[in-house]
Image (tube, rainbow, N blue to C red; front, side, top):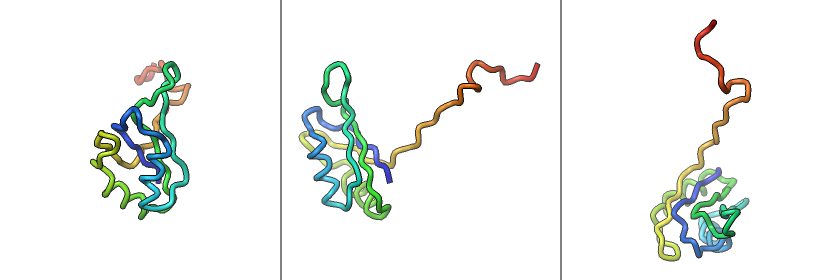
Length: 95
């Protein structure tokens, strides 16, 4: 299950996030989103936990937990919705 982790302190490292989630189960990957211009953290990231039960337990325990002075928010990541290129700029009404 892919989890979205928000409100991460700017000084928190990807390794710190990984260790926090590993205390609740297996972490397949951890990705802290970085700003391309500044190279600093954008304050959110993603954690993938392959076992759904462990992921749900991590959400329950870690949502609202303080990490490096910030209360992180953890929830299931939503699938990104994209419009097909052919759907752009088309009228809804038939001609």
